[in-house]
Structure formats: structure tokens, C-alpha cells
Image 1 (cartoon, rainbow, N blue to C red):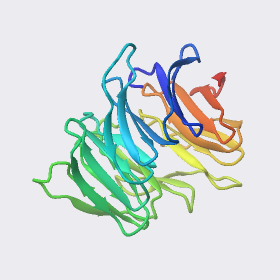
Image 2 (cartoon, rainbow, N blue to C red):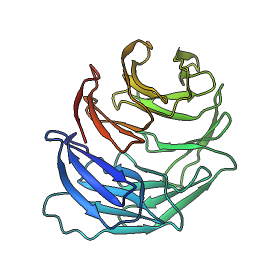
Image 3 (cartoon, rainbow, N blue to C red):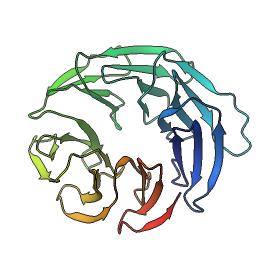
Length: 275
């Protein structure tokens, strides 16, 4: 959550749990939904968007809230959700080929983005533009407001995913290349570091302050400094499915294939609690 007090977990058993980071106990539970495949927390308000079955719902998790859910119909399972920095727009991705931009206030579909190949899509934290990375090396930028034109960037590598790292000169885009297990900075497109593993990486996540990146393979979880590549810690943890840093970059939440949730100290890797 924006205040780093809660973590939201979607269960394949049709439950959505808001877990307290301080107590390690559920603060709220939503029952009776279809299986939940994606989650996103609003950047400024106690609102949660989740993809359940063939639709997206936006609900309040504030205590005593009776705000009715805002439902965005999609027609297929949603695997990716993201709010922009203002919280006015919601990006939904039902698959690796399509993305939809919605107005949160009106629920209106503003734009449909179609790509011929796999991609990752994220909002730029500074200017609100959409950045879409194709399966190969093209990175397409699209402004949210259609009265201005976008641009197309050329990356030197195949991009699986990317994130934005805050710097004194503004946010720098960091590109992740799975083929060479390397992280590339967009300012001069040179590799920042390479991280090798004996097995395929299952997921990666960047800390909001841009100073750490977490890698998981089938056997372990590693947190590494950016841009030096110095390893902070590595712990044995099998089949990690998802990693999330808290907004203050103090905690790391990890969900495994065994349906276990771990809250870890970002500095040491120490397990604070598990559920």
C-alpha cells in the first residue's frame, strides 16, 4: 500500500487478503470472487484494483468503507494491472499482446493498444507517458493525452521487462535482458551488470527507489544493488512466483508456488513473518 502498512495477496482459492505488515495478520478478506490473477494498489488512496475472472474491480480497503466497487469489464482473464503516478488512469493487460487504458473516474476505455508480439507496458513516473516494450528491441512511447505524439526508441537488446530508476536528472529506464541476465541503463544503453544463475529466472522486481533489484529462480531469491551489481543477500527459497517491494523500499513481500507469503527485511533478507 502507499503507506507501506499493508500488502495485498490474491489467492487461487478465490480469496483476496489485505495483510498487515506490522502484525502479519489479515486486516480484511474478500471472499467469493473468481480466481485473482493480478493486483494493483492506488498510489494515493486506499483503493485496490484486482483482476478476477473476466473483469477488473476497484474497491476500497479503508476500514469501515462502504464504497461500491467500480467494475471494468474485460471479457478475458487479466494478468497485469498498473495505476499511473496520479491514480487517474488504470492500465490493464489481459495477455501479452493487448493493453487497455482506462479512466478511473469515469470507467471509460480511453485506448486499446495492440502489439504483434510479447511486450511489457508501464507508466513513466515523471511525465505519465506509456512505455511499451515489444518482444524484440522496439520501445514505443505513447502520451496518455492523445493531443501529443509519441515516439519509438531502439534498444540494443531484447527486452523482457523494464522499470524506472529515480535519479537527480529524472527517472532513468532500466532494461532487463533475460538472454544474458543483464541489466541495461537507457542513458547510454550500456550494461550495468550481469547476474547469472544455474536455472531460469522466474520473476524480477525493482525497488521503488531504484537502488535494488530482486531476482528469483527455481531455488533462491537474491537482492542486488543497482547500478553496481553488488549482491546484498541470497536466501534459499523455492519456486517464487511474485516479488513486491514496499513503497518505502524497506520490506520485500514474496509469494511462492506453495501458497506461502513471506515478509522479508530488504537489507538483510531476514524473515519477519510468514503466512
